[in-house]
Length: 107
Picture (cartoon, rainbow, N blue to C red):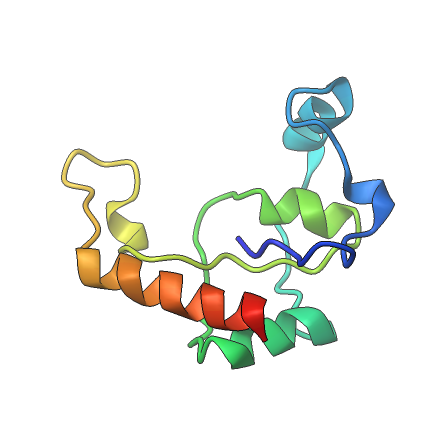
């Protein structure tokens, strides 16, 4: 998931993770369409050299989408292994993601 730089996040998104509003969003947020038409999300994907692929399964991006906040899933690992016994992430992927995020945040 993309975290927006300080000062760039609309106030309406500031929802405590365990608040009643957040729990309601978790129960009712529909699947999210990619927000890549939003300049901030498209700029992030371009900055990290990301290759856009579908994410199968529900993520918090759906909650952000309901609030009108552009978000994308981003991170290392094989999504087909997520939450399974054989789930693992090679260290090189973690280091690569760290470099990409730092470069974007420091730009």
